[in-house]
Image 1 (tube, rainbow, N blue to C red):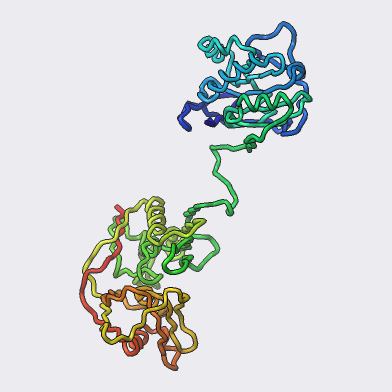
Image 2 (image 1 turned 30 degrees about the vertical axis):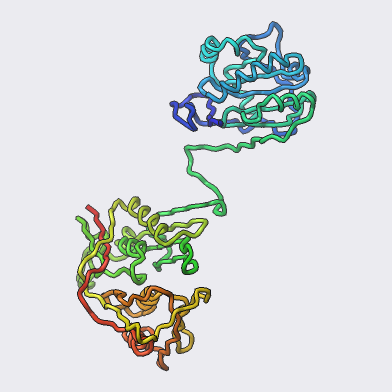
Length: 453
């Protein structure tokens, strides 16, 4: 087991639980000028101070190395894995006292360590050299996780830096015979848990960003990174300079990419967060907050990225939870009566063909044709709303065709390109060529509620 510690010259923070061990944390401070000893470096001869049981004559690291090898063992009294390891090292220090030196170093003060040793006579009476109040060795051998062990051979060269898992009798014997076995070496980098985490984008598995309106970017919009149909789809959702209602609407994957107020209910004590107070008023006489200032205060940018594609429902749940947390709102989807364009189909007409499951996905206009391949009908209906660049009708489509498979079709849109972005024209083409029927009916339809009280 590994326990994390943070060494400080001035204070020890309150104890916390970490990996089932009670760990005392503090901020790690290291002087920039202190040389750090690395793997394969030669250890300089260092006077050893603050020995709990000092020898009669001054002791240095070179004197300990002369025996045949030195292990510098960093530990703390509160670290349970360290204590277990220390008991083992005490036994080994006695067993190999003529060929192995073990210098056990703690940053804790002498009183704390002595109290510990009074309750661990087997450690106190062993051949271990125990140091307290350490400031120097922790700077020479940087670490934040305990236990931490430095293996130095009889030539004074650092041959290994490991955690506690490598402290075994077999490894000790190999070390004393100048045959270092393959061990899990430790390489720690300075880490400040009090600062924001900074890592390369290439290492991110999940990243979420939420900020106010992007200054200098006057456009707004939505970017969604979909995958192939029938497979986990989404890995990126990006709303930039968007209103709250637009972000929530798209997070729920509602029809179209522009929020449809007909399919939303906003329950709030402050409607100005969602609608500009000057909307639908005479701009020449309106004297309230300017549109530019209102947009600066009420437009947001949000991005969620994942390393791997997730199913739409799981990805959307992450987005919704994120937005609710950042905006301090609650949202939900509920069934409400709305006028809907109910879509039906006479299955006996056999005009709609089932796509080959291995066919490539395609949906778009090429020349005067709407080409559809391996597309669910719901995707097609949603595409109509998104592709009609003129504002689509507020009434949504309600699919009652019972077509539950991807379809293929080639729809002739005629020779007038100006009609290709008109919702009514596309519906007429689908009716004539695929046999779909569109009828306006009042029916229950899922809408989005935003509760902001």
